[in-house]
Length: 454
Image 1: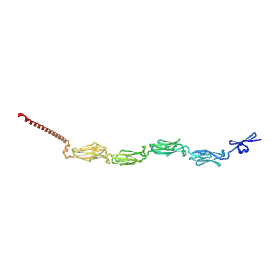
Image 2: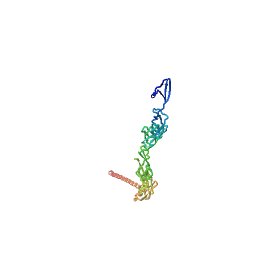
Image 3: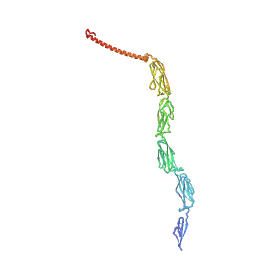
Image 4: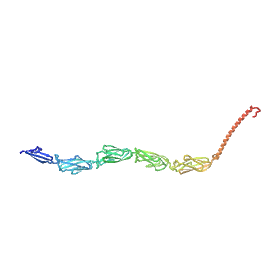
C-alpha cells in the first residue's frame, strides 16, 4: 500500500509531506492513501499581541462634545486579537474618557492625547478640541458713541456656547444709517461711517441665525457755529432778560455739551445767559463763545417807565404882549429820556399852544394883561408845573398896539394918512394944470385986439 501527500503548502513542514489548506481562520490538510483521502481540520489562532490600532487618528471633537475611539489589537501579522483588555487614558486638558473609549471633551479649545494600553503594548492618538457651532457674536466696542460724519472701527468675534472663538466663517453686517466698510473678507473687522444727522442708530452683525445688535449714539461734532437768540431791546435797569446760545457742528446738529461763555459791553450777564441791563439807555453788545466760536447780538437799551417830567425853562417871566417857547422831556428813574410820549399843556394866564411833535414843545403868549399864573404839562400820569409872571410893558405904544381898540385906531390912522397923501397928490396935479392955463392966457392977450374981452 502506498500513500501520497498534497502539495507542499508549508515548506517548513515539507519533511512530513503534508499540506495545510487555509479557509478563513481554519487550516485543513489531507492525506491520500491509495484511493482513500482523509481531510483533517486544524484551528490556527492569532499570535501574541503585537500592536494596537486606534481610529480615528488623528481625531477632533467639538468643545463639550463626545468622541468614541476604536481600538483594534492584533498580532505581529495583523491578525486581530479579540478579548484583549484595553485600558484607556487621556490628557487632562482633553477632558475625561471611559474604559469604553468614549471621550467627553473639555469646554476649552486645546489638544492632547488619548492612550490605549493592553499589557505592555500601547498606542496613542492626537486629539484636538475645536470650537462648536456659533452660539454668540461679541462686538468691540459693544456700544458706540460717534460724532456725526466721523468714522469708528469695530471688531467682531464669533463664539461657541462655551466662549471659544471661531476663526472661520463669514460675518455679515448691516446699519440702520450711515455706511459700513469691511476691512477683512470674513467681516471680523469693519469701519463704520456715521451719518451727518445726530440721533440713535443700530448696527447688526450676524452668522446664520445668530446675531448681535450694537447701539450707536451719533452725537454732534465740535462746535462750528453759534446761534444766539433773545430780546432785541430791554429796559434800562431791568433784570431777568434771558438769552440763549446754541452751538452747532458743521452739519447743524446742536452741541448739547458745549460750554457757553457770556459777556456784555455794559450791564451784567450770568453764566446762564440772563442779562441785567445797564441803567443808561443806548446800545450794548452781548457775546457768546464756545469751542473757539462766537456770536454777538446788538441790544437796544430803552428808557424805563416815566418817572417824572422835566420842563425848560423852569419858570417864565415876560411882559405883556410877549411870549416864550417851552420844552418838556419825560424821564425814567435813571434820567433817561422817554420817547413816544404825548404831552398836554394848560395855563392859568395868557395862552399856550402845543407844538406838532406830540407837544414836546409849546409856545406861550402873555396877552395884554399883567399878572401871575401857572403852566402845567402832563403825560403818562406824570405832571410838571412852571410858574409864570407877566409884567406890564414900560412902553404904552406897545400895549396900545397890541390891544384890539388900538389896532382899530391904528388902521384908521393909516387910512387917514393914505387919504391925505392921495389928496395932496391930487392938489399938486391941479396946481400944475392951473399954472399951465395961466401961461396960456397971457400969450393970447398979446396977439388980440384992444376990444377983445378975455
